[in-house]
Length: 377
Ligand code: SF4
Image (cartoon, rainbow, N blue to C red):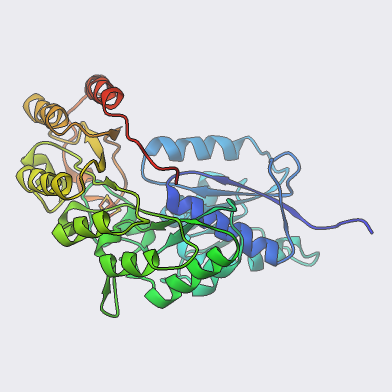
């Protein structure tokens, strides 16, 4: 009998949270009778799972959408969907439906409408749910047979002044620790041996008296698990107990990603990061003493509004002093709704590029000397 399943291609942009969300969408659609295909050419439906963290990522999505002139059903999911809501349809009439990150469980129902013969409505948008249902995490679909991303919390309440995440992913909500353990046990039963716990601020995790270190300890104890890691931590929620847990748990990879963002206190304050340079240095000194040989990586933003030459130099000095194993270095990108948008951005594009290149070269030299010895995760 000829197979008549509608084919869906999902194009992912952005962070690991989006990688996991795309996996969730694939699982929901497979279970609803759709076929997931590896290329847009064979697809009837294309879903862009988008990122709003930088303007550049958004520009790429708009340009790609424009290349499908009415030939396919086009959906926009993820952070851009939440950010633009129904305004997406004014921006590009090629888009047929818009689904925010908290509403992804509705995608099969939306596609069923589009693919039914008696459906004539042309535009649908779903962006109102606060917390996605737990079932989305239990579709059984994983891209990798041996590794699983597991979301432990959604959203963020830190409101770093440059960041759009709290506006598009909502306030920090913790998943129930019992549900997280059930999801991991199911993944292990299906053959997974490596787990990455995900959240915008994992070390702020708290559910029913279980904080992040307790959660790590419980996950580490699961039979069949071989390696464990997590992403991302915030310096203001890091402490000695956290570092000792990294040292002591046998399956936990000895690696910490701790974003510093700037080496100048004035800029950190304007960024609303909640720590000073000195506090950060004390923290990482403890980390290196406790987790001997532990890998340390970071994020840095250059060209934040009002950043002077002296403040940029302070970030370069910090990079030289700390000697991160690796750093993700970004040029500041103004995002709608954020507090930083209200600050005068006096730096030229050329100056931002110059600073970006300078610090990138500096870090490259350091990374070549101190290459992280990651265990495969
Ligand atoms: S901690 Fe700050 S940078 Fe990270 S997601 Fe939350 S608001 Fe954004």
